[in-house]
Image 1 (cartoon, helix red, strand yellow):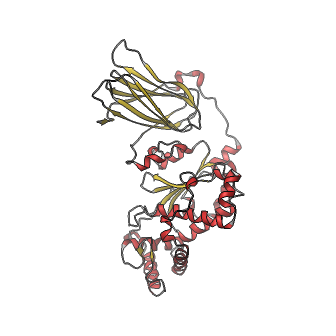
Image 2 (cartoon, rainbow, N blue to C red):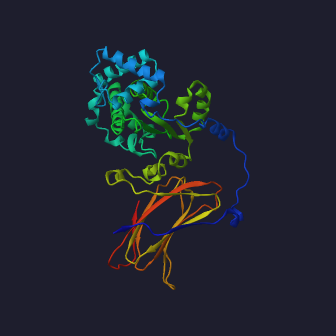
Image 3 (cartoon, rainbow, N blue to C red):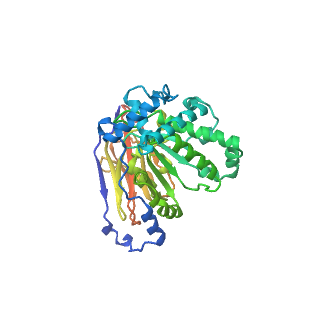
Length: 428
């Protein structure tokens, strides 16, 4: 039997109780000021609903004109992502509206883009690429991969190219034009997998989220590949990305962004989110629940979790500077096994776990002794089976820091009919 309904209390030790840890006033550095200036503060991107009734009269007219021109073209019987473009249903309208939106409802430009996309898909074999075995097992789950959903149900695609700083890896993947073309095919395959998760339905989920990790990314070496990828996606996948989140952004990227930002449309800028190194979990939690964020980015989700049932929801909390938070999980019976996951974004604080028996005179058991958790450490996963009833207390001590941090935890208690000795089970 599974249960996780035991009462929980979060106790905090206010900053004033630890005067020795009180933060000192500080001035922002020039680089920090630039980072904040470059961080997008525009209105969040509002995705189209694709309801015809919400369109302006000029947009409705443009949609009908595009259909009429498509009927008169040689592509009148074409399909895209399994949807006949002139099928007369909502799915077709969603796709056609994406091309119109990408060209500001200029019908001739939208038709030209659509026809070129159809030609490319036929030549590339995009409709069947998902089923191909391209031999990039070492890149799956590392360089580009679909992983979970955001809070609004959009599939999330993660991109991280830091592994290509290794020259041997770079040569193996991008050593010549043939290898580059094969990689581009694999990258399109990843995107097509994400698009297969979309609804293509008014009011539904009709775009994905892109998260790009810029940490250790070799800019010069990947320039050719990056330009190819950007060109392919911009020309053939219009309005398929609802939000682009850049994480582990170096300071110079934000400086560059502040320079070219004035030349971007408000709609394009509203899709961007820029997060400097050290703010990854805090940024991702705004858009993605902790149980769906990969563990390497301060979440609780492991690739193996996706192969099982939907992830167990996590509880979110914040750890303010100068505070110690105790999470108390009460009502644990003798012989029951409690399993928990806990993570704090950017850790760099002290963590411990102890079991406190209910009976007076019993000794508290140090399940995990207090230790400093490094900033780079991933979520802690552990379990414990007590031989007497009591409560589990998970503690995160941030009293030596002035920085507020996001955090999350979840747990499950599996009851047992037999009493067993206290048991520790560690899994990382």
